[in-house]
Image 1 (cartoon, rainbow, N blue to C red):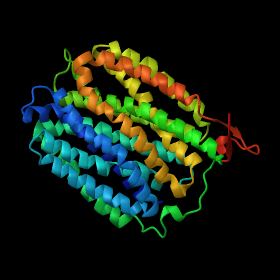
Image 2 (spheres, rainbow, N blue to C red):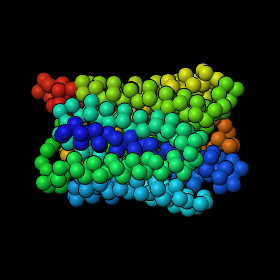
Image 3 (cartoon, helix red, strand yellow):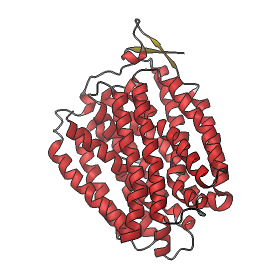
Image 4 (cartoon, rainbow, N blue to C red):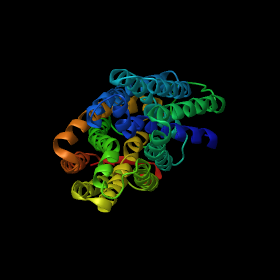
Length: 400
């Protein structure tokens, strides 16, 4: 794959996460514009975007495998850009909710289509996934920094309109750069790196989906609530929205590097022990964030996000390692439809939960969810060398 095409696929990942978090970053300004007293009261209107981000993954994966990944990525760029412009034109909570839900439908395309397209010819898929994850989370950082800047200087509508235009431009470049596919992925014959029996593969996919759902719950709660959490914990030190955006963007930018590190480790070592370590370290970090104040809260949040982001590459790496390329988009779509539909409840519940119990209780609960994720991962099959070749060498077999 050419560097320009890889770059565009990574930029698309950044757009995907940026667009989904513009609302959470600008929610206070939008609530004020719409005449609502509290940002928590507007937050549930964004739940449709995250629900469709999950449910839309299933048909997106099916079309990606059977119609073509290039065509679906063109739909992604066009749909995201136009829906962002539509959001910028909304006039009330319900029209906003409808436009956000439409955007969530198009955002569902990227993960089951863009990532399999990126790794389909990669010699080191873990490293490719790590860099791609870095790109996605730089999009999260950009949502904090760019949205805060645009809201302060041009209004919340510009925070959607400007990225929307840029996404349409990137789609036009992708149309020129991406070569046409000679056959849809469903007709390919490339096998997975690890050969599993059907029961073992179903076990892996079940563990992966459940672990991804609980991890996604933490991811959605933090990325949608971190801005307001920092505003509360740093209220005696920092009050300027742009400065708060920069501090949150710095957290995401630093934490994103963890995905590159983890991606390279995945190419060298078995998945299970690495995944367990990364998830288990989330527990004390989130517990510390539950009680910390001032700059200690910022440091605790940084530590938490390093390991929350560090866990992201494992699900895509699991699909690459165990699933044939001809059906990766469908498997990814099914996994995302189940796990993200569950974790999308976090966006709906975030505002009411914080209003009722506060961020301290929320972060303590997330520490418990991380512990549950580790328990689920303990059921993942281990890997043993096949024919004397290590799992890192690309010819492993699964075992208990």
